[in-house]
Image (cartoon, rainbow, N blue to C red; front, side, top):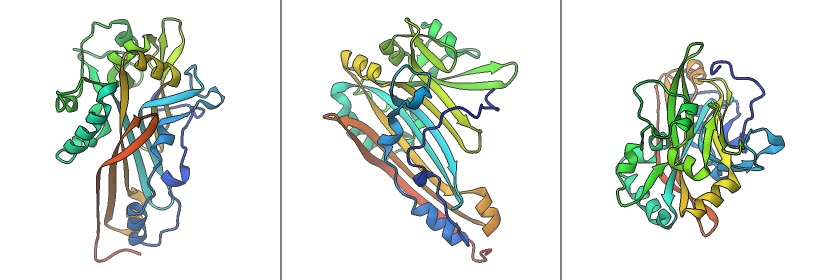
Length: 294
């Protein structure tokens, strides 16, 4: 039930002090300062992590994130939203692709928005992840962002699909894209777990929390399997990441009409075995009415 997620689902919050900002603001100016001066993240910790105590269903000790959305609130009056999605690239094109994305992101905000890098399935009706895995002839599409880089052979690493459940209505799923499923030899799914022909769980979509409140959605994959199989076919991943900080609705109710919003986008990739993060886009805005409520 997507509206009643069990309490025992795993969370991955490697930097709680950086995303759940605590404090005791006494006015709107304090909240604005908290938004604009929020600490930067170590994205490597959010993308690569241990499957501690087998919390995730993936049969691996080491996990890699293909897709992620997280939302956190703290007493400092700040809402923190994190977004991430991966792109499948030819290994030899990584450096050139990163530079091209950095240049194009100066012209279009869509380029630095992770959700605009996800693909999907062409279907005249609803479709489940199991059907997507069982019927590989179903035509998929890449995001329009990929059309902006015709000089590279690119594919989304993540596809989306939607199923209309009689009990819960429309339910949206995130799954490894067809090109990545082929690389990982994924043959089946129950909607959240994705299996190879030996029935090993290679990828998992995990959700925790409550929608529209504190919430987390991860698409994680077996690390050794991913990198070994990508290496064998000359492929690599590049990650698009974004963090957004803004004032919470509660702080506005408390302190009057004001607003604060900070957005930063990044691109992550491996260079000579080292994970590199470069900033793509940054913007911030805020306003405060003259008659501030204290």
